[in-house]
Amino acid sequence: MPTDLANIVPARPAQAPPGRKRLHTVDAALTAASPVAGIGELTAAATAAVAAGRGHVLDTSHVVFPNGAVTLVLILAESHLAIHTWPEENLIAIDLFSCGAIDAGRVTGYLVRRLRLTGVRTQRVDRGAAAADRC
Image 1 (cartoon, rainbow, N blue to C red):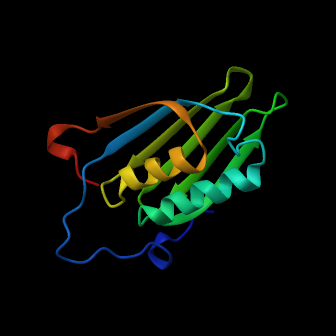
Image 2 (tube, rainbow, N blue to C red):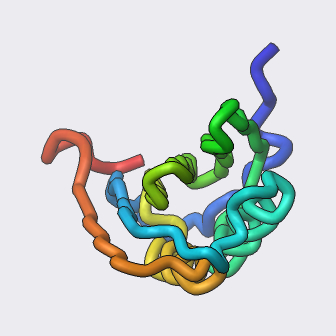
């Protein structure tokens, strides 16, 4: 059954224009100190990162694979955050898709620091057709 977002999504101020659709990506290396092996700690870090960016988590889901790899998805009022790890390669990929109503730099910066990542590469990709780039 679909969730009724009207009851849980914070309303934007009437004068605030909707934001652009953007994908923010982080590709990085995990370190021995990266707290990604435990799903609880990774979920807490991701939730805190969203809060740091003034976002709102609506729901979470995750899968832990036999090799210890993790896929964590946070459904946000502003869109979604996905984190994928490949422990056998010491890799992590973070994807934040947003409609501009969240401070993506704060979210990704928080995760880079909290997860103690190295070799960080970031990208921002504008999404949507030029005439329909508003959420």
